[in-house]
Image 1 (cartoon, rainbow, N blue to C red):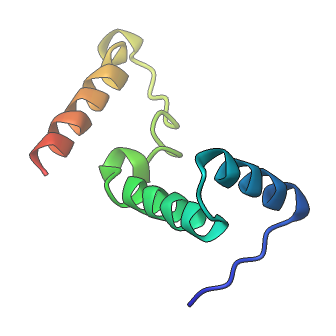
Image 2 (image 1 turned 135 degrees about the vertical axis):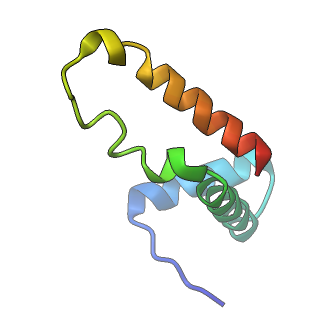
Length: 82
């Protein structure tokens, strides 16, 4: 069993969202946490490295022009294989 404290704004938003879905607050929270955990754990390297991807600029614009796209494609391909 886990208890979670929400500030007033998040509590209000969560209650409204649960009501709109016709579910209980507990069920809404369980689904939200499950979705976030699955997304985080299945994100692969791209998700774990998102804060540092593109942080280094090495000059050589001609060679590196398409490196971001190439890297994203490589990560997507690896994710498919997992």
